[in-house]
Every structure is written in C-alpha cells, then in structure tokens.
Length: 97
Image (cartoon, rainbow, N blue to C red):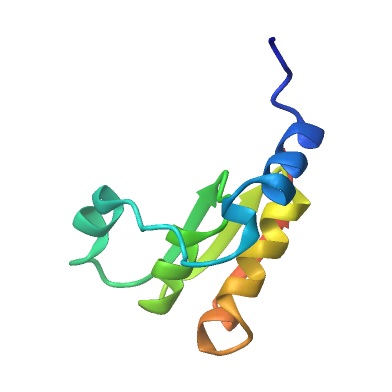
C-alpha cells in the first residue's frame, strides 16, 4: 500500500517506531565523521534530522547546529537526547518542511 511521506506519516513513525521506544542513540553516519573530524567547528545545518544523532554529535564537538525536521515528534526526541547542557546550548531545533 502506498502512502504519503507527510507530517502525519513521520509523526506516526517517530511515536510508534521501535526507535521511539527509547534505548541507545542511533549511530552517527560514518561519512559525516570522516568528512568533519578535521574541520574547525563552525555552523551546520542538518535537514531531515530525525532523532538528531548527527546534530548532537556535531554540537558535542563545538559546532553551532540548526537541525530541521518535518516531524515534531522526532524533534522532541532529539531535544531530549541532547539535554540542556553545553551541547543543548549549541543546538537549534526547527520544525519545517
């Protein structure tokens, strides 16, 4: 059955998926690690951030990150993972399409 990948779909995905049940943070994309590890931290945009694994990883290394996702459920999970410490202070979560 075909479905639309719209806001309702992604909110349902992030509130009903096994990943949304909690547990370990998703792994960071190894290509991001390889391409950014040697860079001086600056600003970054993560579009379609989902649970925010890459956004949190970058912020933990000093980057100022704007993380964007269509799903408010995904952004809530990402913000909880980031917390309120130094990392959370370097992240801006934006709900947008």
